[in-house]
Length: 454
Image (cartoon, rainbow, N blue to C red; front, side, top):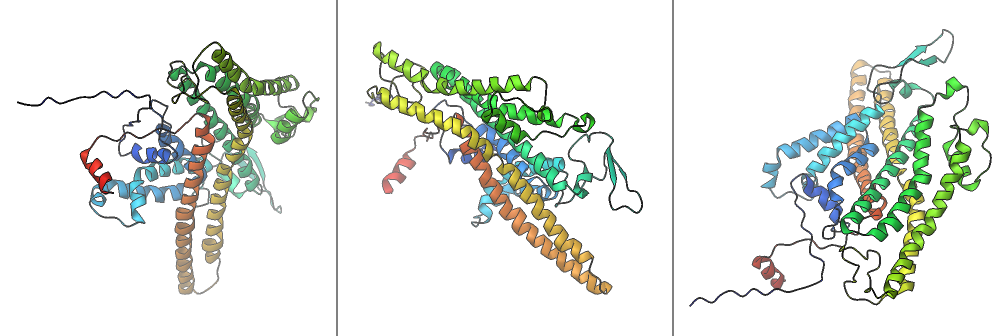
């Protein structure tokens, strides 16, 4: 007769593997996340946000309409012909671009968008209209400029020919980088909030997540508010110089309660609000440090089981340690102290780290402008016979095209991608992501046989 199959149930407390449904668009972005670490079972997967956040931050650093269009054409070529490329064995130079074709596609779209905001196309202003009235009197080297209305989109092209265009671009891109950075870090803390609610980690929510929010917003969220307030205030109409926000922030922390000079005031009541925010930030430090270890100690003394450090309630069921480790209050206190110091110092260093968005964007625009002016425009100014001049222009354009492709389209793209992934792994994911899970692998006799052969 037939022998019935035997099914044995093996009970284990090991964390189940993680299975993530993917498609052609999301698989490459998820691979970027998994290179850092696979999500824990049922943990919030940051890879789903990479589709937008990774592409957008790249666009901020690589913002140029012309370069973005070239990248878009290359990405569309790979996407349209993906069936043909899938049947071939690609070399080591083409294969990475093919596998990341959808990443290149979205990065190019955001690069074009940010380039339109910057009003930059191959390093020069593209939009032909201006919202400034320009009056250039005779026998004068300068012009009188008066704003007619704020531009509906992007940077006015008149800034590209102004004497202080570099100062304007510096200020604009630096402040935008800070706002983007604080927003993404706050989003990371919001992801931690979602994890806390899902796994019912109430101690981590009340004594880590909430004070982290308050600390970040009391200092750097307030800085973002000051940036927007400075942008929206007509300082020329008030007849006052715009205050330096860096000096304002430093004096707020180092000179708590000191009177604020009239020329440094941004709004009424600033002298009252700032000391309260500094006091709130200082309160958040012991709030993050002490309550959670003390509560765990109290629970242990009342006879609760040993807990796992760092995420004692990950399973949502009472905080049992997976391996039954003994409760060690000193170790838990040290762990919490490290977490608190890391977050407080990280809030400063991570915010400063987002200034790489400003630095790379400025470098990209500067290189584009230098290549265009020193190579192409200089060739147009050469005085020579028409056929010789035409040959010079042709050679100059070829040199410019090679430099643009080699330096800006290849090297700058790789640099921006590396900085982008660092911002996600360090500045964003360290706010909430454990990344110590195991990827689900379906059972297969072929896989077992391959492992035995190895």
